[in-house]
Length: 613
Image 1 (tube, rainbow, N blue to C red):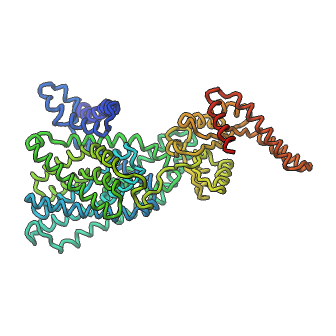
Image 2 (tube, rainbow, N blue to C red):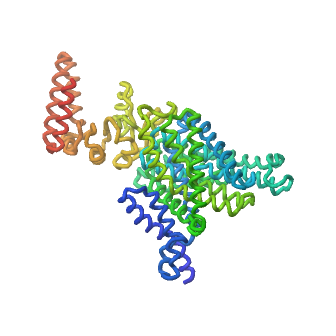
Image 3 (cartoon, rainbow, N blue to C red):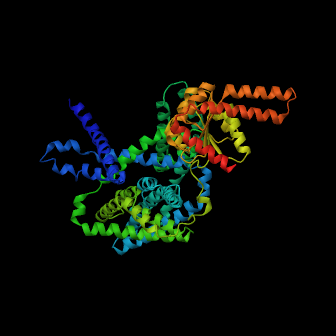
């Protein structure tokens, strides 16, 4: 019985978290407040300083609290890894190279500048050089896990501010391993007793730097194995899915990649999130990136929610109440100083005023890696325990302010001229498939349509659910991805919201109907052209709202008639005119079956086309 009770206790925290996610997040959404704040508030409410305080008088409240914060923190690390993996899917090695000036220029400048300035401030507050350096390095980093969802929620990721912010955050993630190594070096110097505490001994630098070798080797192995294994593995999973063995295999493979890459990076001394980012970058080069993105999305959101709940649980209200002026004052001072430094660094690297303001404000608060670095400083015995805990409280409070800082940034930047982009051109490449023609089905018909579009300078993106067809298209350097276009989420990922037209070329009538119905629901104004099996199928497609349907049997008959008449000596002009006339007559018959509410918009489009002609 005890074992069952223990197991129930282990699952109790998970049940409490899921209940909070099901209540707090919809409530905050209805109030038009960021769901991130909902998770943070849930963490405070469900933590030891929330409802648990009342458990002595009302024991049943213990079942509504989270008792094992360590378990929540373990899960939250996966949430950050999933976030970085999704970011990697939206990038590519080429895109990353194009952003190198912002990542390795602005990003590393920000880390170095904030570390030095914040360390100087901590020294003025009475800390030793080593302690101040650790505290400065910890607070110099920002929160990828909070900032990126906030930017995404406000529609900023694809713009100048989103690009700049991500570049700085990526540089910070890359700096985590060297910072942790630096903390180890400082600890080795102090413990060796070769120099007075607080001073640096270069003689211990060499053995400490040897710890970089496993990190470099591990990162190289992740990249090499990823390039060799990922595409064949997902191709095999896609073939199994095509045989009807279920979507769950794709989900399992996606989870394996994220968790496996993260654990491999951890084993090499790097952060789990960095390993997940590299895995995302590798998958971004394959045809499976869209399907993987759909598979991972629900887990990412839920696990990030765990992270935010963990941050809320970590807020020690007793310590805050003991010295509210000191904790809040320190949080405000550190955040404003860091934001001012980031703004200056951004302007130094050529970022325009509006983008620099937005970037500085959302990156001013502390981040999740601050707790890792400050915790390492405590463990190594080189940071003042009491003061470090105060800084951790200030860091937690500052994380709570990130959605507010984003709102303030919006208000401030409305007064700044936004007539032109605020970033260098290399950072402004579009992430999505905007203003392209979307081809659904890339068999012989779809491939020919793509070739004709390319020949006339029209960009396209194709999607097909047959892995062999996709592999063949990719081998020919076509812009084709694996996925099921009958799902609205897939069409959205493929850019249906901004597509110039959608062409459905599949030879399965039921699937064509499904794609047409979904696309029309997402975009009532979309140019939608579909392949039909015969006249009856064409009539049904017009009823579903296509702009044009092309029946195979009718087109084959017209083509046969055209070739026959030309071979018999009838002038080509007369033949083409009669063929077009007959095609228009068929189209008119099919369209008469359309409901009036669908026919009116189509007639309006036809009228506009005639007017332009």
